[in-house]
Length: 294
Image 1: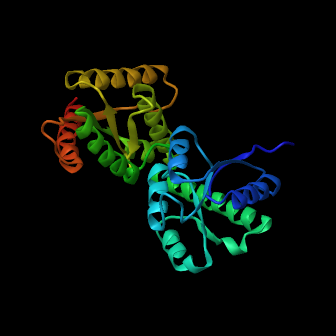
Image 2 (image 1 turned 180 degrees about the vertical axis):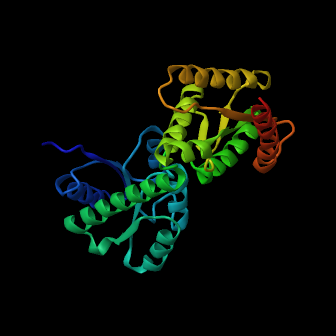
């Protein structure tokens, strides 16, 4: 069975070394598809136009040298693992790049087909593992939505983006009513089903680009991106309609009921995510009180 070639960007100014490293990577276990750049000036446009599985770069180039080479590559391709090739006298500098995010380094005097392929393979595997662990720490295992940690991190990033682009957004806090009653009456497995069904309803109502999260036991939060201030209530009403339609199917012995609070982030009057959540929380509990009085 033919393996998919691994795309590699090799940055090395010495043409003899570059040809040798390309030969090693193409014929070794990596079976790499290697693109060569002889300078950072050549490399940066390639990084903006293509996606590579790995960057292998010398630290000293004709147009950039030392840690600056690594920092500029990292900035241009923050999600791509980097292996640094060093001169024997630069090992201490190479260790600094690893401490600052490079996956590994390899002294040029020690490069063989075996060592270059081994270091490259390990760098990709470690990076893949780290990304999968990062996804786990940001994802709620039951619903597959973002968890609280993911929600806060992504929302803070989006606030910065909203301020730059001058676009507001809506925050929805959503509480699944009567979860304790479902657990006590029908068992925790049914309670889990109610949480998953709530998540499905949120995914149906909001867009893939929105930040949809389960931030607590029975509490969910959504950042609805680029929705005009006056249209937030339409999303709330549509969500309630989705829940109403599902309840009408009587698929389960219990019914879904949601209490919803909203708050709007206005880039002309910026606030923190904590204050925004407090406003939405107050409205959500007012909504919950209405449900209890019915």
